[in-house]
Structure formats: structure tokens, C-alpha cells
Picture 1 (cartoon, one colour):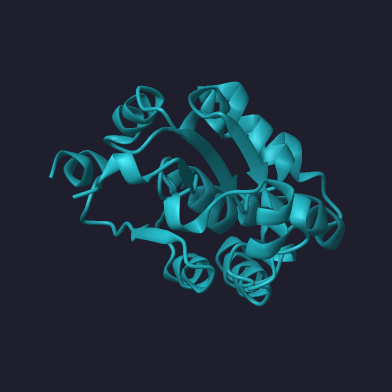
Picture 2 (tube, one colour):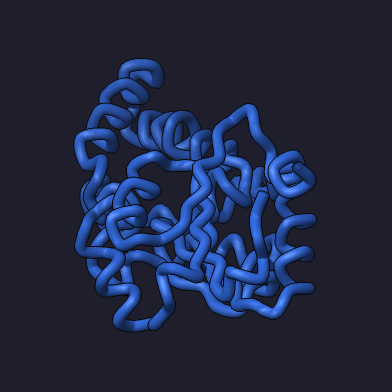
Length: 201
């Protein structure tokens, strides 16, 4: 149970917490590799394996989430491709109910995502994700992803908050671990626990 009287700031992850990961997983694991293979006359299955290994080699770094980095690496403008499959962008069950609940409370809600700013803009265009919160930030603005220990002090300096009165909701154990080091209250969402069930408990 959450004592909302003790919370004045709620930090929210985006992908996998508020939004379904189907869009991002489909793009990076299937659509982009298949497009790249067709463009270069390569075997689709082998290209998928090769590119996914390349992407995963950058896990834990800002480059892993950077559409501009991968556009340069692949010699391909990825932004139009991301927009081509934006029909797969959607909220997870209970996410909009949670956001509406937060809007009714006397607190500030802040979206913080590892997604690149240009990708955040795409999701804003499709479902208006930023309209549900008081502010939205991408980790690229702070030079480190949320799983990096340097992220939280930089974010707190740019947007001051009291860790004792702050709640962070994320689906990543790595993100939760680094936030805990700063003393932020956290909720780690897993696949079998929807936001709706969590906040009706």
C-alpha cells in the first residue's frame, strides 16, 4: 500500500512500465533487421541474429538507446523506419488509470526514459504520453542511462526532488537498483503485475 500523503514526486519509466514493449521489440528484433537485409541483399534470419548481437553488445550504455548512434553505425536513417511501425505503440493495461490517478493527487509526476528524445517525440505524436505528466526527460539529456550510477545525481541536480518523498516506478531491476542508492522509494513492476492491480491493492 502506498501512503500518498508521504509522496510529492512520482518518477515514471516509459517503455515496459507505461507502454507495451511490443513496438520497440518488434522494431529492433524484426523490422529493422529485415529491412536492412532486404536493402543489402542479405539473408534475413542471419541478419537478425547478427544485428541483435550488435545491439546487445551496447547494453548498459547510452548508445544502446540512441537512434542517432545506430543510424550512423548502420548507414541508415532509422527515424522514418520507427515512424513506419508506430501503429504498435500502445499503453499497457492500467497505465492510463494510474496516470489519471496521479493527476488527481497534489504531487508532480515526471516521465524519465532511456528512449532517445526523437523516439519520445514519436510516442508523443501517437498517444500523447507527455500530456499525462508534469514533465518528461530523456536520459540522453544527462549523458547516462538510468542504470548508470551517474544518472541520478545529474537528474536530481537538474530537477531537484526529495528522495524521501519520491516514488520511482520502473520495470527494470537495474534502474531500480541505481535509484535505491540515492534513497528513492521504488516499485519494480514485473510482467505478471499490471499497474491496475498494483494500485487497486
